Length: 233
Image (cartoon, rainbow, N blue to C red):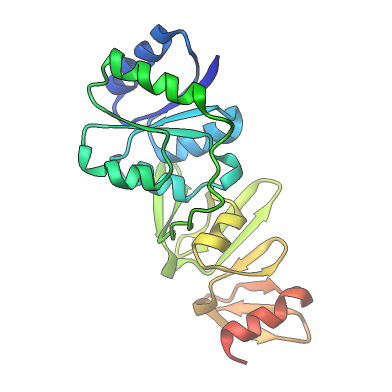
């Protein structure tokens, strides 16, 4: 059996798709998510074989979600949407298949066969990463989308990854690797990234950076040359 995760902002759509998937006898449903942040959590926790993903969702679309994941976290993807105009972009994102709502059992059977014929996990190594322009963060029970221009620092700890913005530090499900590769933040330390545009001072002797808001950030010697190159000093 293939382990499947369903991501759709509409409850009825999630329930309808789950019933169809269970009916095929090919899937174990390991999660049902209403938004991209829930999906990121479930992907890391459950490690599904297949992701059934809606494209049009509030705040963060299905395509944006894919750009926010480490390649190693990404299972095979099947897009499920009511809009056929996204088909080309879906296949450019290396989706295994593209299902139109309402999903028909006969059409789903073809998707099952495609998934069974796959030689292994989806390989995105040859795909150019999509840039991230907004970082989803948790702010209470809401999802705050932080523009990159507002971000000064990103740091990792045992508790997770946090970004420093106008509201202080906010938790994000994105990894430092993704923020470095797809959001353009610069690595200055094993556990820190910095927005070069937010750098106010560099203290070479102390090995720190001070940001516009007065945040002191450590700089490792190994990352200093790249930082100086980006700053033109």
